[in-house]
Image 1 (cartoon, rainbow, N blue to C red):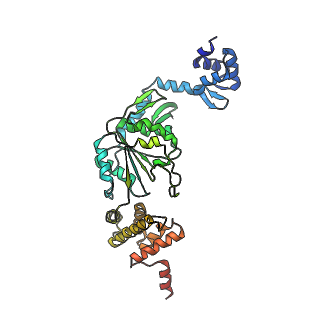
Image 2 (image 1 turned 30 degrees about the vertical axis):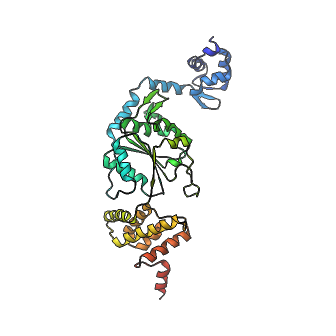
Image 3 (image 1 turned 120 degrees about the vertical axis):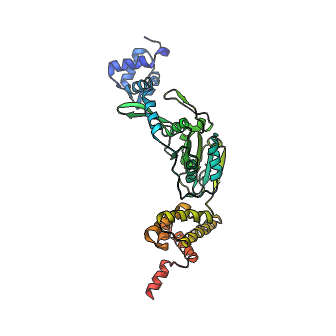
Length: 371
């Protein structure tokens, strides 16, 4: 009988499997403790890799994983095939107009230096779109990961998956980006929990050790990390971005620099909207100019504390798309600002009515019909 300190996991599992089958309960483990002269906690510790739930262990789990380790050709075969077939370079969007930090972000990506970047700014102002289009312009692969409170190490790094009845290792987006030398985009990173701290070594440019397979993955040339967020990782005091979290200071400190993304100027925004109008076949230069000026006034009023909402560039594009459907300026605006509370919605509509002399509000239309 082995001494308490000499009992191996293999000896324990062999005994349990031979006497109680592959799925064992706490009673079986206690009988094994008597057989080997060890304490129950010691036996449980030896069985930690087989844990299913309280008082239940499945002895086939680790065996399947070990078989996978001994057949390394199985996992890479899937990964390599996928890597060869996929082209992760984003498509160029003809509607995009460079503005703000685009040139700087493009230079960083083009340098192929490892230089983590944090981009913060209001919702719908092109943070993610700018990174995608920078990669498209440079023909660089981009792997975008949308972060949520549930995102964990398995989502990011990868794990074992069941493929054709076999358990094989599947790379997560982080490992794919590391091996391909791609740009890893952590979108909405301020929604993350502390589970994202599994990226600490990655953010230092040192790669990552896969503890489940015993393999160390080094970053290929050109690998970089860019994160986007509505906040600076300190939470949202005004409640506008509910669900955002205070990120670990050590995590934030690993980003070399931070860009503060603003909304485009009316001139740039007009060019963007004109591109969308051309694509949709609903060109109206006056309407475009009015929308850009309208949004600019609203944003300035927001900064001064006069209102609690803004019109984003994304919402202006929504309005253009609505206009292409109905051909009615005011209806396009109304259906796209209905998401706001009644007071805010009315103030936005009335402001546009003052800018555009060719449209009427609902009240004005009703009065005209009564006459």
